[in-house]
Image (cartoon, rainbow, N blue to C red; front, side, top):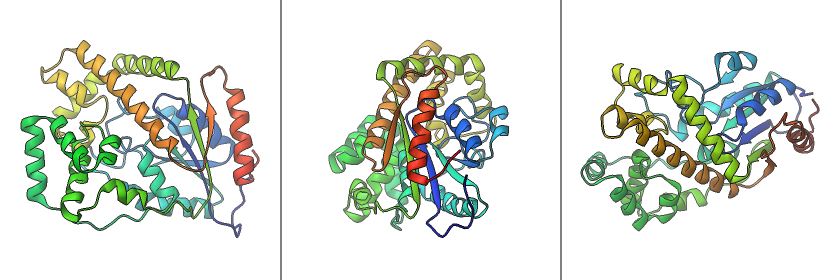
Length: 321
């Protein structure tokens, strides 16, 4: 069991993997077995009222294990990697002091890596006229044009960012504009030494099985009322251009509600975008160090996967159930 007050570095358990790979189910089981509290490592689950499209754990699931960094922002408010880091680090230390195991679960690679390895983010300021100019290019010429501009100056960031992630594309362009340095180079220089006794478990899955699960999940989201959820957010005054509304499942349904896509077209686009997103997630995690991988292709009762994870945790954290 986890023991408070040990003189070693604080322990930190992390579970990563692409969307729809089975992180929620496994994390709830592990958290109960190891006296852990979950810190959401998902950049979209911070937003209130955005439940279906972010695949947020149900109220019943949330009642089983204490969760942190869920429903902490209104959808019109931005959330950044720096804020995730600022909120997570004290939580990790507090939970260790309480004899609890801090357990980050999610799929937002940069956010999770920034905490695991204590990234130091530059204090690069902002250039509002430049941001406005880039936003006009996106509005008038399309997101792809802006993304290609980024690829010209910072191909590494262009590979990491989706064209529809306009805010982050603009930020990467802004950093290059102001400093002459690529954001991707800044990330490469980051420290990769962890201040924690760290155990990172990565979940992977046969690509065809994962894509089928993604499509089934999106069909279920639509049955659960995703269109209505997005409609309510718009009625409440959430700006369609807000960062939160650029998330998967929201921008596609906004396009449908605005009459630019039929529901069938929006659904097909969402499935395509989510498959591409899962591919980028896996690519990011494959480049991270310290990950022990567990294959989730054979789901079943997942007892085999649980045994594998228990073995990893016992080795890395010296913890028994």
